[in-house]
Image (cartoon, rainbow, N blue to C red):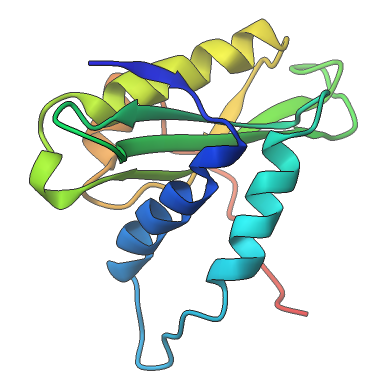
Length: 154
């Protein structure tokens, strides 16, 4: 299994894998208008010489393309007693092609992403877990938070 950090040339495949993940949450209003802006954002951010976003990918064992990915970014918030420098990792877009699931690809990509966070001095990482993904994240040490998250769409 080859796990590596994604490069700009992987942007199309990362968007394809994101579409697979988002397909589990799709609604009647689903469209593909998001794909090109997402690809452009990924390409720009993956090319940044001082990246705050990283993606780790598993290459397809039998040919071209990717079978799995885990993407994360580093946010810098105000510090607090538990995290003085305020750097927090956020994990999103963990996805594996359906035909390649249950083979350890997501775990390997997640482990590489978590190591990248550690190497960047990040002390905590957050994510939103689907019911299917929760056992993996729990096995990696993630726990449910007690604070209620809220969001306002602008």
